[in-house]
Length: 309
Length: 256
Image (cartoon, rainbow over all chains, first blue to last red; front, side, top):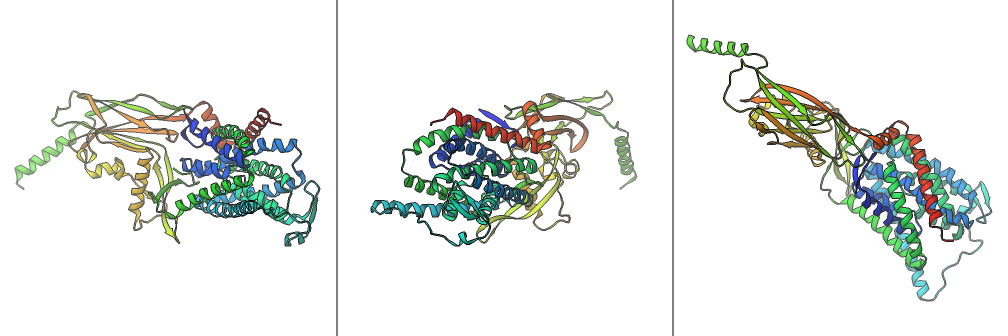
């Protein structure tokens, strides 16, 4: 069934978009990630302009993060104080991100920067995750216990000033790295249309040493706050949020996520991480191929504001 | 040239000047005034009907009439960019900004344009892709301009927004013609100007204009306007929608 998207200004097959939302929702439920890093590229590769794809996925991330956070909230697995600091930093970051986004659209370099960012971050994170999970799979096979977090192991991060106490996470750390992480994720998230969970979660675990039980719920709150502000700014500055597109994606996404989560409960955590790592790498490589291979069409048309035509 | 010859030429010119200014007249009608874009819009067709009317004084001449129908969508300024390879990566480098280009352009004719009229006439009325006026914001012509204007037309044609039909105008009767312009789903909204030109023996005899509008309607119109005029309010609605969807899903699929 064809449906006309009022902001993207083109008709799409409703079931195709719904299916994409559901498939990505399934994977995000399976791996416990937002799925924005899959959804935005899928939309772009299916012909929706990067600007509309990024902005509409932003709204979709709000819905899927909120849906997922309800469970963590009921189980009290959220550090609201830490989330609050992250959200404040995230809002600053997404304001900067949307500003850069608007500027890049006008100069016609948005697609390039989005591609380069995807290649860099997906490649980096995917590679690290794959290495990490392969190592721990090998360790488990050999019967060696996974390295535990030792108390009193502090890096230079913990020597920074402006310390703050986070009771729920049992942390007493400087807010400088927290703000830096929040701002960084905010910029990236709003520019790329991703929640940034696949970067935020490892960052919170490895840099701040937030307990793994708390980290997912807390990062979901950060994503809701940051992406809601990004949606607002994208809509206000770039008029590129397609509500109809976002709604179809949201409904598909939250339904798919339920089935993914059910399957995910039955598959081993290390195997899941290795699969997610491969998926992340594959998307990154797809963007890399696009960047370096000779395009069929060298020319492109766009309005002065940067809308592809 | 002898005297007789000179006289004959003068007589001919006088006759030409005395000819009524509009011996032939065009009557044009469209199948619709308004194309409405609703949620099920996947494109449509607008049919242009016309009749060639001759007043009694017009001498019936040999040769056939040729009709050219040009439809122009609202003007827009577009940037044409060209990718170049820099350090192994393809990125947008050179660009030309073309001012006031038709966002949609269809030219239907009863025969190929070059058989109907000389190049100068086609250029004057901007009939045909090759005869569109490209005004670059960059100012003076530069080497390589042609590659950009050619790419512009090619991309527009691929998008279905520039179309031509060299035998698209048909004559169901001797002086009645019609053609149907396909309007694809991705058309921009606005006023579309229809110009009909009547040619015979390489000369333009008459021209007539009409117009139709393409507009979003109902929900599409409302959403588009809201997003354009009250972007922040529209953003708030989208966020509320997201939270509601998320909450509903969380409640419906609750497992604990």
